[in-house]
Image 1 (spheres, helix red, strand yellow):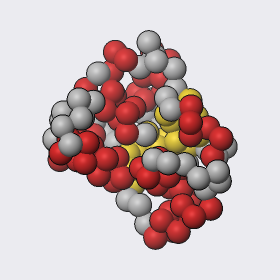
Image 2 (tube, helix red, strand yellow):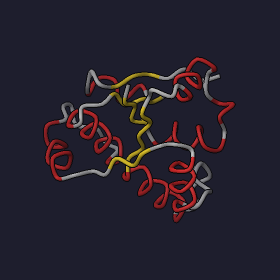
Image 3 (cartoon, one colour):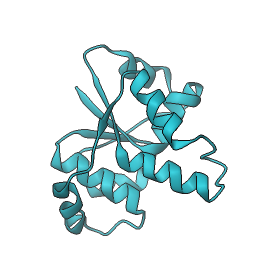
Image 4 (cartoon, rainbow, N blue to C red):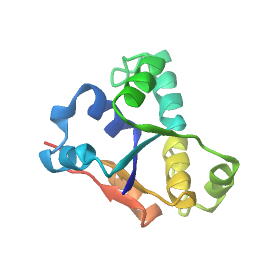
Amino acid sequence: MRLLIDTRILLWALAQPERLSAAFLDILRKPNNQLLFSSASIWEIAIKAALLRTECTARPDVMACEALAQGFTELEAGWQAAAAIADIRPPHRDPFDRILIAEAVCEPVHIFTVDRKLVPHSDMVRMVNTR
């Protein structure tokens, strides 16, 4: 199965896996699952780090390299996903979430998140349990 991981889940999977449930960690470790992260997540980490937001203290380049080293594959946002953002109803306020939702729909791939606000926007959204 292909799994697109949202920014928060990516940060936790790489730096704080204890925040994720054992069941979800098992999903991440299954060798037949393809783990994807969006280039939009690296943009989000970079912007939040530059704004000195406490949830993003890691360097974005280090996080991207660590994700690749741990077996994640980068999903680069293409023009199709950019155009699909216009069709997200109701409009979602967070631009990075809009990109992730559009990528999930265009690929298609399930996006895994802890953010319940994403659920109404697509049936591609899957909620992740935390500890």
